[in-house]
Image 1 (spheres, rainbow, N blue to C red):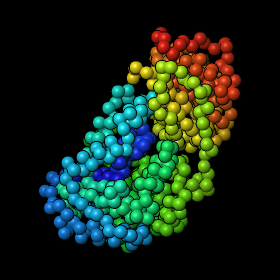
Image 2: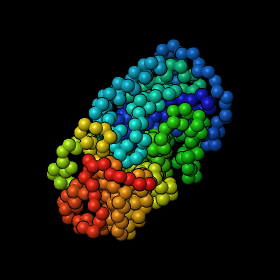
Image 3: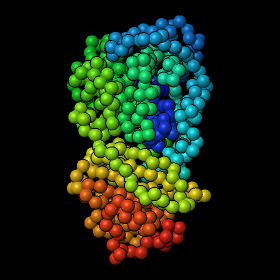
Image 4: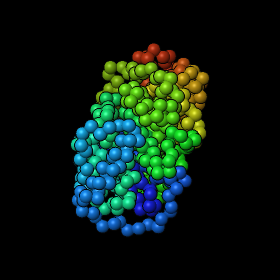
Length: 478
């Protein structure tokens, strides 16, 4: 977990759960980078005052008595707020920017190797979530090192804070990160998050519990001096905590998908955590850690978590030799409701994306690369919707999204449940049967037919347009 600080506002924090996990190429979606997310604490709820930018204070003496005493005091307060007891002493350290930067880079290497990071980036490209050629890895490293303020390391069980943060700015950083320290002593959060693997969507859901509850702890800490408790406040919109993104230079440069992915564990996690607090108080999180949310849908719709509604398992059911040489598998995983909302939002308006993705009832995808060239990708997806009617709506609107995604295309063919066209990098196929839809992007008709036969779905009508082989160059038109 990382907390970042910005001087644009005296109380603004930029906080990241920044240790890369096995996934989610969102993580660019907690894999390659894990999910980095941010929050800027806003003035309306916390009654903070706008402040003019100030130069960073000089570095404080390492582990000076004032820092240790403050950390111990905040830790005691957070234990009282959450009811989570400190079972063993916690190591607390002040670190230089260089030391924290080195730690972040080491954690990225430890959590995911170069091959996995490459696969994550290519999958993001295949879905259209980042521009082709976008240097995602270096971008995230820069983003991580922008105004780092503190972190809790669940592996070393140690709390770090940046040595240039002034004492008056330390308490809010501590309240968030020391909540993680207490979580760890109760629930062993590193193992708890990893238990969701290899399902990236499930792992992101668990990350959201950690970050959302730490946000709630920080807010309860801030409200305490006013004699208030977060659970006693009227329903609030987490967006009131978000400041102006233009004040953070790296986020200004980030593709929309990255911004949304960074925010999700904090703000959707906070909404989920508020639903726990309002019903059961802080004691309610013991049950959440015992029965974690299964996917991001349960984070986005806490009522589904409380009802125990879980999407049934789903498989791609690809033929054993699919897609054939020289294709090589990069990765196979799950997008979840959050991921599909982001995919749809790239090409449709946000309201439609939110409405369509809310009918998500399970999905899986796989990404392949043409061996020897980084320009050829093959993406296959299978998504189950809540009803056949929802699948029909998905078909109509995702057809539109695919047309926007592939501007240069030819040989369009459309039926009520089938949509295909050609591109210079292969064919694109969208097919829906019952409540399920599948896509194949970058392949050829033979691969599509092979897959349909394995699924037991009706074959592509012979009256359709002739599809060119995957390796052929196709004349296109706008």
